[in-house]
Image (cartoon, rainbow, N blue to C red):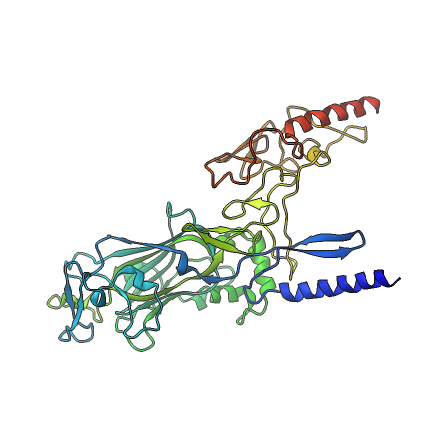
Length: 460
């Protein structure tokens, strides 16, 4: 009699401990993907949503400048201070380490004195615009969790655009415009993030808050406010994260808004500190950035609690029988249920939405439809392959006249359930084409099941 009571007590303690461990902090770390629990049937797995911890994503990026020769120092150049055109004691020389200002100094440790920074060439070709594109690439989908912060060593730009890409730099959309005069620069009314509401959170705004030219003590940073946007759903101190998670679960556009593969900083006009450019002192005008902060996490679709950086690439360590860089498809032989992103809800554990193994007992899900024959068993005619309910085309495929799935690139199969082999990294989880005793081919299982169903129907 003592053992059942002990098992029950252990199950309760385990459940409480996991709830306490798993409850996320503000935009927190869902750190447990599965755990073993005791039930009436014995020891079993309890699956839950999980995601990697937020971290400094600048450690994993690649930076590119356009034009590529825009960094100062080749040839060496002397610069004047913006606020004092006669103070010209700053030199940039790419051949001398102490005087060079390469792009990687935008991402180094900022505790040193003097400050390290990247610097552009000066505006020697005025009135031709001095414009620079700084592209940050991760070769991985990431989710932003805190403000993007740029710290300028020179005056902050008078005109600038922050852009994002969700397809590895093939297309770009603006995140925010920055200007000393939004109407003049971009024909947009000036706004701040405080002007946004839940309904207008996805609006692209132009702000004048971060474009003053002179470098005062607290006027060096330019921000893209992530947490202020979170606060529109979660409250000023992000105390109501369940509300935010609920919105992220049900609104794909909202999830995508905080998701990127690349960022692009378009510097369009340097600080001048005046209404007119002093053409006699053009060495006063340039860009210099000492630090860029991008806080985020790997996007793993709530199917992994860790992300590793290996051979120059970030990748999720997938759980829940999923695979791929973003855990965005089911493993081979685990298409018993169509792949789905995990869910944050219900708080605190969420819902894992695991991919299920296809066995002789559940392969009928590929065949049986809700409309049955009078017999207790039913089957679909050979012409009916897919519909919009049970027999959904997977991995982005579309159903065509219930007769076939039109698969997206990279997938094949009756229901687009198989990933096409695109190299060793994409197919490392797939077996060879030989039949396996433990994983019988779907075609053989389907044929066997159809024969059995026909025999049953004939007896009804």
